[in-house]
Image: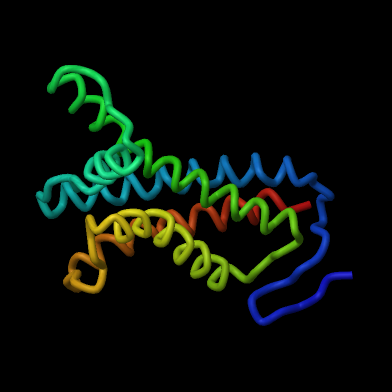
Amino acid sequence: MAKRTSFGTIGKGRRGISTLGWVLRGAAAGAAGTTALNAVTYLDMVVRGRGSSSTPEQTVEKLADKAHVQIPGDEETRQNRVSGLGPLTGLAAGVGTGIVVGLARAAGFRSQPAVGTALISAGVLVAANGPMTVLGITDPRTWSASSWLSDLVPHVAYAVVVKTTMDAFDRP
């Protein structure tokens, strides 16, 4: 029998999908959410004429330095690799957050759309910005309202897509 909490319901879902099945569904939902996040981000860049963020590449550089790992190649080749690795960290955060959502679903957690969207938004914001904050690349406490908005809106778009996709997987 399902147990109700203030955040949602814990218990076996209607579909009887295995944990691995929910993990794969979560990964797919995370990939779809990441696509939505990227689309909203690129649209913002077009509308406001702003450049792309260099923080993903800075994160790769700092992580490589902390791990004492060399990114190989001459200067241009190395920079191209860093430029490719930066966005991959965002993809990993998006798919990884989707996997966590899938694991929560496998455990039986279901929530109302607004609650689930808020929880997923918070989770992906931490997954995306946490490492950059810990590494000292950014400090959200110093962000302007416009910076917060340009970060928050794409992450909410991500969460809406992930929540909607996961809910669709659970329909009979």
